[in-house]
Image (cartoon, rainbow, N blue to C red; front, side):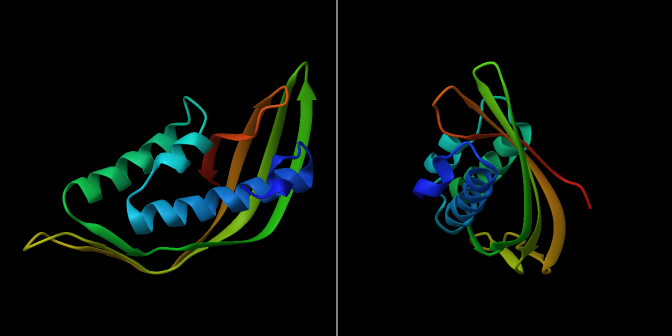
Length: 139
């Protein structure tokens, strides 16, 4: 994780979200979701769903080709309540074309390139690192 992503600041929150999506890209390309799970807070429903999806593909002998996310126009806000930091980061996520390739005669899934505006909520207790508490597509 880059040092910048550890700061409980707007810049730190943006750096963390950028790092998070780099880890998503890695997980999709390799099937290794360990780091992605570490960056996701307990109860992050969309995080858990994404991790489960990647695991399912690779457990079936498949692989994920493409689908790399590129973030632009990141805007962040932060606040502290007691000993806990919160951040919201909104950004444009351009996702490259993707193929989920299953072995044998299984139907592969192809997805065209697409662009969304996403919002991620981060949380960090005390001096701990940010984790993704929630993320959603907003448009």
